[in-house]
Image 1 (cartoon, rainbow, N blue to C red):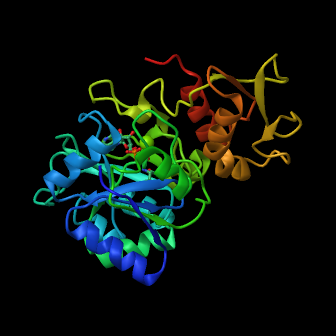
Image 2: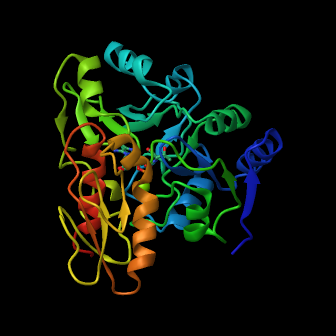
Length: 317
Ligand code: TXA
Ligand code: MG
């Protein structure tokens, strides 16, 4: 155990965080999607500590965060299609899975020995400043214990990882609220590996083609792709129009609940609120409690919201 510091997102705090990272320590930092658990992607021991702190299976590769497309091209091989998508959406909530560049210098633990690498340029000003100050690639999964709800505030990070990491940079609440969309561009046709903060419709419009869903069965599955994930302590029921006895109801649009994702039925507002509300509902439901969620439309950010809710509701291992 170590004492986890909370650092303010000031120039001094960011510098201190960069120094901790340079000495191989782990620092959680805000991105526009969720908080990431950052460590130097080039140091084996640091990357191993990320897996240990999260209790994450080693076969599940991490996303590499870089400050720019130029820096991304140093770790991954971009074709014209990848460059076009990156130019359209970076910085932002999009992760690209691409062939890894040989000699990229990444720890093989980051990619779980796959020939590909997941890379992203986050838009959050604190993440960008930290990447600039650190000056290298940061491996950063979501800053939560594996299988639990992702953090969208510094307090969520501390609730799950206090004592396991050197520091958390407090950048307030994340504006997008669900993890990045993961697009596989390592084969002939683009594949949606995880719906997320960038709507599928926007990706398809930029690519000028449909994007098929799902990873290849040959590849090891990631926790983010496992059935049960994002699990609160309470049991979760979906597509509820009213609460059953003893349930905490989380509403959306016309369905009024004890809590609401968005009374106006706004998917952007709902995504931003999702993980915080899962935690609040969990606390209200109490031990052995039950949470019900109102239906959310399967369009735009609704796809990512429903994906997370289905995993939260899935039978636990
Ligand atoms: O928004 C986000 O993406 C956040 C913030 C912190 O950037 N990060 C995040 O990381 O969600 P994580 O580790 O919780 O999810 C990473 C996902 C996993 O589902 C993993 O399987 C997938 O990325 N992934 C990483 N490398 C991959 C690869 N080479 N091929 C296929 N999937 C990969
Ligand atoms: Mg995660």
